[in-house]
Amino acid sequence: MREISAGTITEVVKRLCVEANCHLPQDVKNCISKCYEQENWHQAKEILERIVENYHIADEQNQPICQDTGVACVFLKVGQEVHIDGDINEAINEGVRQGYTEGYLRKSVVRDPLDRVNTGDNTPAMIYCELVPGDKLEITVAPKGFGSENMSQIKMLRPSDGLQGVKDFVRKVVEEAGPNPCPPIVVGVGVGGTFDKAAYLAKKALMRSTEERNPNPFYAELEQQLLDEINALGIGPQGFGGRTTALAVNIEQYPTHIAGLPVAVNINCHVTRHKTEVL
Image (tube, rainbow, N blue to C red; front, side, top):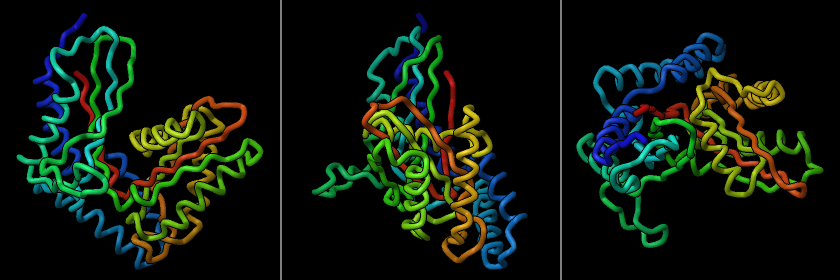
């Protein structure tokens, strides 16, 4: 049994909050650069150029890429041979509290969805925990802005809706979102499970590299088909037209009930931020 202290977790989460907000993952940068080279609409190309300039400034000055520094979504893969010395939830929230305060990141969390009083430190984090074999603890911090989160949807399709129903729904969600989620976007899709599981799968899909396809060839092909269809919508960067509406479509699937076909679409803007560390 390997022991990891709560204090260590706090320090890691604190650092990842700042790093994730200031430095875009390389795979997303690569996608943006590739889209820039392939874009033939001058206005779209100019917007992509400004996006590249923005993330370069963020890198050089260690400044947030976007003014919406998001809700801190924290994904854990906890090895079954790991013992946490302390309260892991409090350790994570303390890391978020320190990271957002000392990093001068905008605090956007309210204590209650209806009374709307800001907690003042961006806590609590949204924590997702998965048990895995081994003696490691993997921590991923993914700040999630709500311009894109608000454009996300879930639908309980009928099994008879089939593959075409899934494709139609994903495309419809993106089309209805239009320019609101600050395209070019990354589209996370969860298929299967239950109502809540599908939503989790869609968000988890956003953690996967935009350059990594689903290991199942059927879903890998579906990801490419949906990406092509979404880019054919012509929404373009920031909604000004062009061939670059989405950078990637990532799908995660899971078994489900014979009577159901849950589908969730979690949209992220081009600032698809996440940073991982393994302890």
